[in-house]
Structure formats: C-alpha cells, structure tokens
Length: 199
Image (cartoon, rainbow, N blue to C red; front, side, top):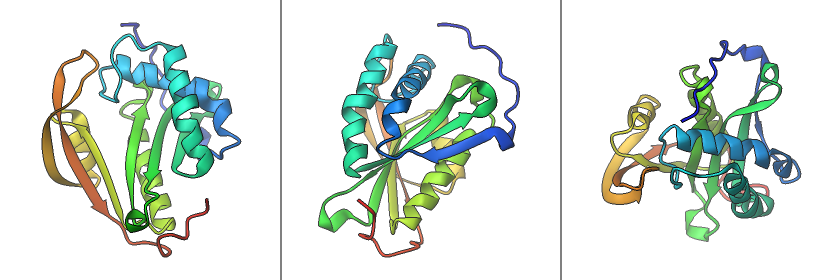
C-alpha cells in the first residue's frame, strides 16, 4: 500500500461541494477514478476488489455512472479543495428511482472521502449536502447499505439514520472475503412534492 502524504487541515473557505451537471461530469471522471482507487486501497467496500487500477476506476465512472447522470437518474457531488490544486477529496451520489411507485425515495451511494481528508468532517458535509438536496427534490425516504462492522455504521447512526436489517454474505470486501451488509434508512421532510425533479 502506498503511504499517504499528510495533509494540512482543510480551510472551509477553500472547500467547495458541487453537484455536477451532465456537461461537467466528464471533466471529473479522472479525479473520481483516482479517489475510488484510494478508497478501495484503504479497505473500504465499494463493489471493487484490491488491484483496481485508475484506468478501470475511471472507465467505471465514465461508462456506468456517466449515462445515468446524463439522463437524470443519478446526481453526483464532488468536494474539491482549491488549495489542493483542485483535487477531488470526496464524493457522494444519489440514485433516483424511475418507477412511478418509488419516486419518493432515493439511494445514497458511493460516499467516499480521500484517505488524506479523513477525520476532517468532510463525510458529514457530503452526507448533509445530499440529504438537503434530496429533500429539495421532494424525496421523503433515503436508503443505503454499508459493510457490517465497518466504521461507517456508527457514522450513519450518528447522522440520524435507522438500521433496518442485516444481509449475510452480501458482497466481497476488497480482499475478496464475503461480508454481511447493514441496511439503513432515513425519513426526510420534503421541500416540494415528489416527482417534480428536473430531468
């Protein structure tokens, strides 16, 4: 594992957390790919295994996530520190439901914070940003899953999320070992009726 370079504390005035438009998204796929590689290398379970290359990670963002962003099925935020030469330090996404009976809910996916930015509160900022945006879209229910026994469980509980269950042997961790996943949900007060989302 490559040692991580220590990072000076982030200046909140230089940190921006921005939802990417379909036209902006392609220019961030390389940075998002590098972020994904860093987080998987750090041991987080995000659907990928150790050995993930920047090329593979970038291709996943471009070819899998990109079309969903383009058609409005997914919203992606990036956290960029201007003092870190614009490096992407974190991201979070919301996956919307396109079926008529599920437009009141969305799934929080791919919440990632670069190893050098852990412990700075960036994860909480990203999660709160996605929650507010979901409420603004008329979403009343958010769901997510995370590896059982990981630090993320406590993170979500402290953020007001409710544990709803555990599925055994749900997915392999980066080392290829099957692990259970814990399901969480959070109810929101909508700012506007569900289904008014801009496509």
